[in-house]
Length: 247
Image 1 (tube, rainbow, N blue to C red):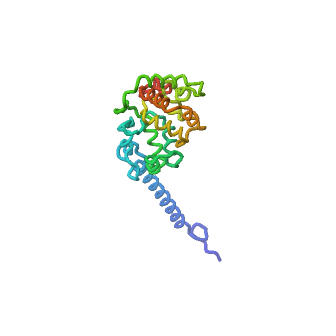
Image 2 (cartoon, helix red, strand yellow):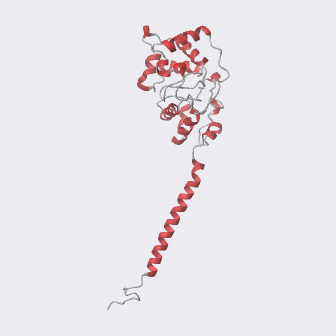
Image 3 (tube, rainbow, N blue to C red):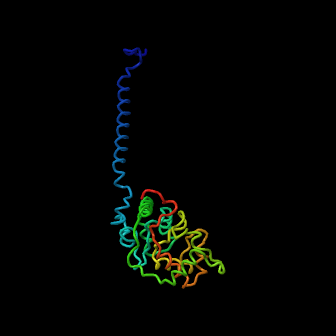
């Protein structure tokens, strides 16, 4: 015969209900503790762009400022480019290409690899919003070369099938979107080095290889002239996208 409990059931179930409820409470409590702990640790592991720029990331990437200057203004004397004010999308694309080997550089490849994906994004955003005056050390451009560079940059040379640089890089070299970087105020030595690299096939990470075709039609004198022109421009002239925005 089945034993009936005090409530008319086969067995008293109060304790089992208490135990189940207790287990659920413990599980919920532990879950909350884990979530709160992760949330509290999140800022510690978040990519700190200011720290990386000044001191590196402690995982193999040195301070960006050591090569690119205190505010990303670059070091013309050593050939390191200006990165302040370049678009975040462009900077991120270059860092990713360095990390993957799509863009070759004995200096930047190990640096980019030492940065996590979050850190690359953080550094791209950081320098895109940076504003810096022209870097010291840039040689005063030759006026004749600068004038010749201005003609190529603004009008092109259609007898050689050369479009104006401004058609892609915008008026006064202010850049267009994430594909065509700002050239105004960039080191002439760096511009010469990159145009030469495209011309010689040492750099080819541009969309549709546009720059490869253009650079191949420029002689060394024209390359130097274009570089002199853009190096002399004010790098902090606002673009169409930034005019009227809060600095």
